[in-house]
Amino acid sequence: MADETTERRHSTFRWAIIEGNRFSVAGLLLGGILFLLCVLLAVNLFPREPGEPLYLLFSAFLGGNLTLITVVIAINQLVFSRELGSPGDLEQRTRAAVEYRNEVQSVMDREVSPVLPGSFLLVLHENLGNRAQRLRETSTDIEHDALAAEIDELAGKLRDDVRMVTEALDTPAADEQIFSAIAATLGTTQAEQLYELSRMETEYEAQLTDAQAELFESIREHLLHIDVARKYFRTVYITKELSFLSRTLLFVGLPAQFLTAATLAVYDLAAIESLPPSAIVGATLVAMIACFAPLAILASFVLRLSWVAQRNATVMPFAASETDYTLRSD
Image 1 (tube, one colour):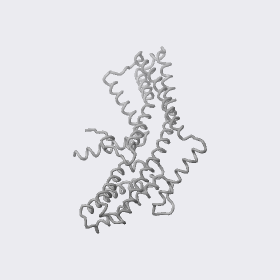
Image 2 (cartoon, rainbow, N blue to C red):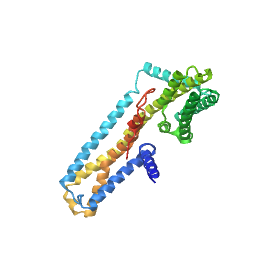
Image 3 (cartoon, rainbow, N blue to C red):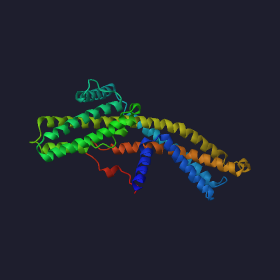
Image 4 (cartoon, one colour):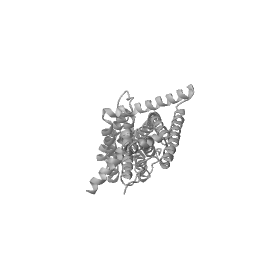
């Protein structure tokens, strides 16, 4: 029962942070806020008629949301500024990308590498899995039991990572969304595997055959290429996501600001007092949800953006502790 509860909580967390549609997450946040407001209304802790406290609250929301939208758009423009440059800078960046692609293509088991992020990472991991399997097969001919066991363990870890990533990427949707390529590799640990490769090369240098040393080097190159590709796709994803967030905030924030301003404009009119109490309460709840809408949109996007940035903050061959980016709920 405890394992089922833990698994359910993990699935809910993963959906809210990573897999879930951002608008669905924002809708759930707004639904929770509406439920809380209804509870306050049921226990008579929510105003049922216009008054100064609500007037001040709507005024604060009007100014706060305006600042929120302005700051997010400013941050977005700052991110976009990094994509601008002179023809020489742009040419250098393009040539560097082409050189990286050629380096990757030279170690792939095919003549032309894919251009879509999901397929590109999928091919890299399939090649890595093939080399890990060949490395495992060489362990049967090793007389040194400790070396054979460590090679078998390392190959097993590599193939487990490859299996997890390929299962996530071997779908049509993985090519349609760049985030699918990022999410598929969030749980891999290339830095630790690089460390194991270097340690085994140093400790068992005399026992390793030429074929094994060549496989070690090939696996190392594949791990480095995978890490570079993942971080590049992360950069592209964050740029695209911030652009989409800014546009969404404008579409949601401007109507919300208009509704808040209209609420403030009519809040103290004498005609409001002639309306039924239920109509006043309903209109107030709608206005409150509109006030929270930009914040809910921002929270839903930032949850995933910050998680992706946190899980990819380190640069190989260094690695952060697993507890550095794990939210504990116990």
